[in-house]
Amino acid sequence: MSKRAIALMLLSAQLLSATALAAGTVDEPSETVQSAEDVQTPSLEEQDSTLPENGEDALEDGAPAGEEPAGEMPVPPTGPSLLTDEHIAYMSGSGSMFRPSGNITRGEAAQILYRLLPEHPDITVSYSDVSPDSWYGQAALELGSLGVIRPNNYTFMPKEELTRAEFISYLAAFFPPRTDAAQFTDVPDGHPNAASFISARAWGWLNGFDDGSVHPDQPVTRAEAAALINRALGRSADRTAVDTRPHPAFYWDVAPSNWYYYDVMEATVAHEHTVTDTEHWTSFTAVPCDISEGLYLRDGWLCYYSPYRNDLVRNDPVDSFDFNEAGHFTSGNAGLDAKLRDIVLTHTTESMTQEQKLRALYIYTRDSFTYLRRPAYAFGVLDFMQKDALNMLNTGYGNCYCYASVFWYLARWIGYDAKIYSGTVGSNRQPHSWVEIEFSGKSYIFDTELEMAYHKKGRYDINLYKYIDVDGWRYIK
Image (cartoon, rainbow, N blue to C red; front, side, top):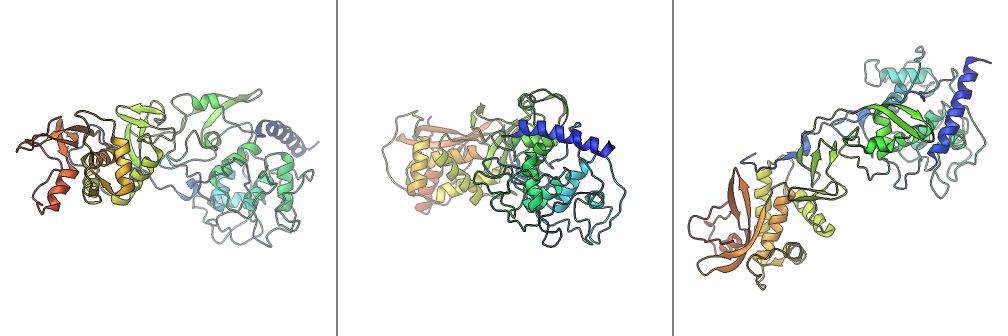
């Protein structure tokens, strides 16, 4: 029996076993919020992608019309295979971003498959749009020489985004063709990659959607690509190892609650393993992460990165800040959270310092609402913030407690450990509410409602932003 036949038999046995497994600043306060802009922009090969919400694999690369004979599955003449025993990291992120929802380009797909080649062929092709010095150059030439990607074309079109049909045809080219499966309902007999879909389904690493479709002409994402390759190669992350703190990899845009989380870990973390009923990681190489511990404002959400976890703090407090399952600071009310995030995104910019954002949100609170007298709260009571903030944001009207509540939430939303008070102000000790924030060990008053009231009277000389009570306002808390 030839070496190639033996290799294919071994690969088939491994894949059948795998199929069974796969079924299925100015005066900063003590906490400094770091900017989302510190994250690097990923290169083309690091762009992201995402699978359907139900986690079904429907990755496919549909070759352009006329590239492959209709319904004929491309079989590389040299019979190449992909690494199955050695679990290398075949995908990577950039700047702690994986970009799971990003569509994969042909250059990226070539680079991913190139990393998984156990042997490298002689180069027998050339493309007018591929320089050997480009990051995908060697990968494109080798995959073309193997007959997997555009072997009979003069151009490689590396920046073109792939369809599911195209990606599936590339991956299916590494497996002996099979015909013992039903076709997907939305793949016609004359489709250029019809045979690849049937073979992938027969091998068990392409399931499609619940309605029997596979959406062949939709783009394929990085998350989908990782999930599909893992299934095809019989790779499945050791969840116990991945869940152990610190986690082996951290990406801002990949959370443990995402359906693709463990597929991304399997694809990006190199590891030694054994297989019994499931894959067990005996050791792994953690993905380097140079993020400092602390608060970060990203895409309008406040997060806290913990090196101990190598992850965001989730479902836990840090000092006075509560974080939800997504790792986002929360007021405890999803509707209020959405409104606060929208305000921050609308009235601040990423280029602003933390205190410039605070000033912008102070002015927003001071100038965006109309005063409406309401009953005062008892001295020292602090159970009104959520209700009063929502009330004013929903109606546009509020009293001092409403103004203070909105600004208190907004200040905390951008990382200030703001305090809210229900006390009195003035010589006649009128019930009143305001916010205080500490800078360099000194507490300052922020009173949006009282400053608004004086501005309405034309008293623009009254400034209660970062105010110290030294001239008779008599704030009592």
